[in-house]
Amino acid sequence: MSAGTFDALYEALQARLGDRVQRDVPFAGMGTYRLGGPMAVFVRAASAEDLGVIATVTREHRPRVLVFGRGSNLLVADEGFPGLGIQLGGEFETLTIDDHHVRAGGAVALPVLARRSAAAGRTGLEFYVGIPGSVGGAVRMNAGGHGRETSEVLVRAWTVDLMGNGEVAERRRAELDFEYRRSSIRRSEIVVRAEFRALVADPAQCEARIDEIVRWRRQHQPGGANAGSVFRNPPDESAGRLIEVAGLKGFSVGGAVVSEKHANFFQANEDATARDVYELVRTVRARVEDRFGIDLVPELQMVGFEERDAAETAREERS
Image (cartoon, rainbow, N blue to C red; front, side):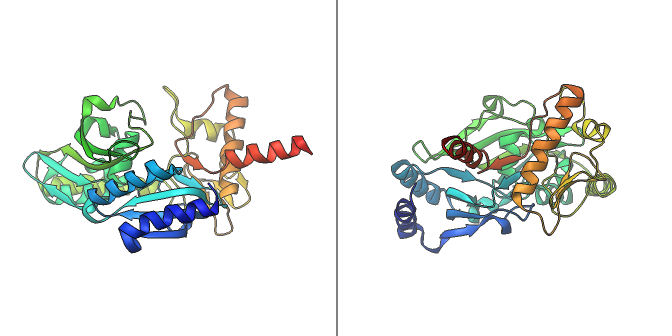
């Protein structure tokens, strides 16, 4: 899309959604890597009605769409994202608890979901305290940790398809075809709400489990600017172990470095660029494959890199 086309997209959205729509918003302030250039158009949707408007406009203008929550498994190129970035807020940040279920909007932070459920004496969701993402992202990628996965505790979710009619649709757990770190939710769909199964328990025991997970995380995983696990674990193997055995702990590209504490965490120093992280991912992946014959699959979503690499290659071939 050209700059003029983005102007038209912005104007169409701004006319109906007001100041929730902005131009050229840097992604660096929204992701855990604290890196990334501007999104051509950005909108924070506060209600299902907002998403209906966005669906109507995107069907007309057909921009590239990037839906994100807390940006905890996302790396956007330094040049930015030439499309429409969408983040949820407003009514999608609500959370309610009854005897057997916890219902949370797609924008609710997973640690908040875990802590509020534990405080209310609802057990089963404590593992979420160690995952720095949102409910919507957890459902989309079947997020998990500490021996549990979203597919084990989800009852149902509600989604909006931006390329469909823009209406909220209920999806039962069995319909989502969960596998390791994936579901059948399409790129054009936004998870707006989810219902989780939780059992009644002693709040003190629930909060003790929360504390145990937090202690483990601080002991075994680095803080700072990172996006959690970079690669999915291969079957019956650990990506972190493979990277460590390959001698890559502490290996760096520019300002991006493989963590000394956990080799499947790549940290961004203050002088890092998004390209540094991207090239580190590529290099580590290649070296592990050379050493072990195993192609590590990134869990980290990287946006805006390969398109530019292909364009640069084409220009070189023409010159």
